Amino acid sequence: MDSSAVTACVLIIGNEILSGRTQDTNLQHIALTLGQWGIQVREARVVPDVEEIIVDSVNEARNGFDYVFTTGGIGPTHDDITAECIAKAFAVPLVTHPEIARMLETRPAPPDVMAARMRMARVPEGASLVDNTTGGPPGFRIENVYVMAGIPGVMKAMLGSLEGKLKSGPVVRSRSVTAFLGESTIAQALAEIQEKFPDVDLGSYPFFRQERYGTSLVMRGTDEATLDATLDAVKSAIIAAGETPQDVQHG
Amino acid sequence: MDSSAVTACVLIIGNEILSGRTQDTNLQHIALTLGQWGIQVREARVVPDVEEIIVDSVNEARNGFDYVFTTGGIGPTHDDITAECIAKAFAVPLVTHPEIARMLETRPAPPDVMAARMRMARVPEGASLVDNTTGGPPGFRIENVYVMAGIPGVMKAMLGSLEGKLKSGPVVRSRSVTAFLGESTIAQALAEIQEKFPDVDLGSYPFFRQERYGTSLVMRGTDEATLDATLDAVKSAIIAAGETPQDVQHG
Image 1 (cartoon, rainbow over the protein chains, first blue to last red):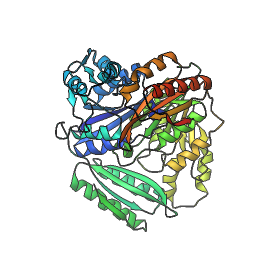
Image 2 (cartoon, each protein chain N blue to C red):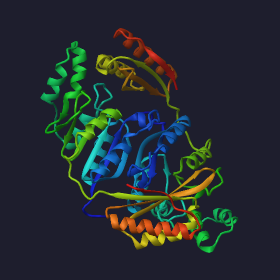
Image 3 (cartoon, each protein chain N blue to C red):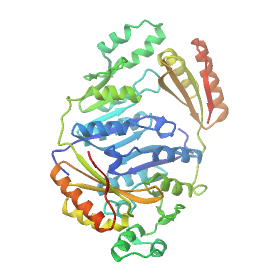
Image 4 (cartoon, rainbow over the protein chains, first blue to last red):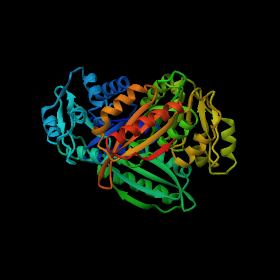
């Protein structure tokens, strides 16, 4: 893998994903968005709302990747423990951020409601804010860890606000082509093509549709010319196997 | 948490999930299915098609949880490396399973195609098979690690074949109710209810629909009577806040 690559780990925090109650869609959005920005998601973890596990996961991830993006657990209720876990991971106090506090205080509320709302102003000492253009309270950043909401619409707004503000490596581009061929039929040719183009990541993803077996061949890499050469080789292999390359896409 | 709980970790193996090209849906299905069987998914990891990472993740997971379920990487192409990684994780040789080999040999093919197909007969020494009722080659099990296909339809068939064959703990049941209330409004009441019923996991999941903010309150636990008492307390809190409990569900 390219040593100039900028990498990320996504931490999805929430019992509701692990119980199966909620289908996560945040990972895909984050992966596609960061990919366009030249940041490669190399791992994702779904962890429960358990302090020790969140703290350990954050520490492993922030040491192993250029960036960490978390989703979930930053609301006002007792089960929102992400901010305090991040503070513990960095061994810094959890403090009230004056800017968020002012924002929350503009809407009047009874004392107990305001107290709950103020939970959302708590950030690890030294954190800066991640804008929330949906109007709610912001997320935050500390060092290389970005803490975002779990609600997809709010997460998207927070992530979007980071465009142009992160360091980036080469953007991974893709080519793909499908063929109505069993994978085994072209497996040997694919292995040879992968060997010939080691800088391209060549994946084969079988499917069953229109009552037929087929496979999608996906090439990913940072050099457009090498990708095109790989695509040509894969198309030739499909033709040599007696089928027609279909649905060629450049990404 | 209940010490009689039976736990699982899900390992989703595949670059296509991390690149965002494919939206994973396997985790949700596995979590819901295992949940019904009395097995709690406590963590999930999405890892790339990189040997060292897969080996390390399998070893961490199999030592940390009662069960590990993997998806992806067991096809016939060069990028299908799960079987060899699992063998490495267990430090056993990768061998050809005679039963799978016989199954694959029944369909005639040219030598190179048959050779590719035979990749799917390779299992770690000592592995047993996980049935694949879709007609394709099976998955396999070694100790507490179950290795399944990534294609959702095939994964479902493999997982389904394990029904009644796994050890199980208490089944986690749920109650849920929604209210058109901001979370902060009932945050204090929810914290008090959580404190009163420590064996119940009470989660609050905000949403925005019909142009209004609301929240879903979800209670999870193994004792039906305690869940019902918690639900009553949450409904009372919603009513005390001037709203109407809606969409009560028992799961």
